[in-house]
Length: 81
Image (tube, rainbow, N blue to C red; front, side, top):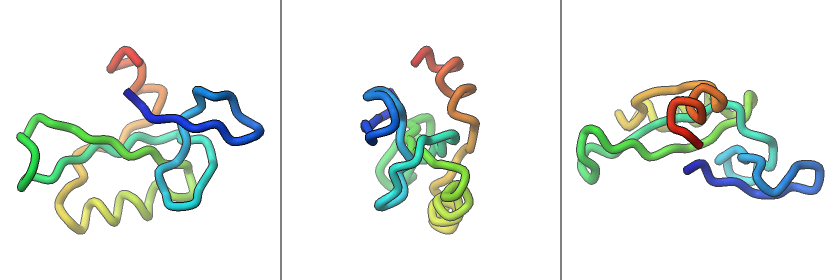
């Protein structure tokens, strides 16, 4: 399930970027896992707006956690959200 929040100009089910302090609508899903804690098939998700996608991807990638980056709409249709 994709977490959501409700900024004043968006609906209550609008997914919001995971970057600290950002309230922009998310358009990307960054699927990741920590191999020290999670089984290889487990995927946790962070959401990203266009502005923060690269920053969040770099953060996860440097730690070896990033597994996939996909458009939010594609993730939702593939996962039935």
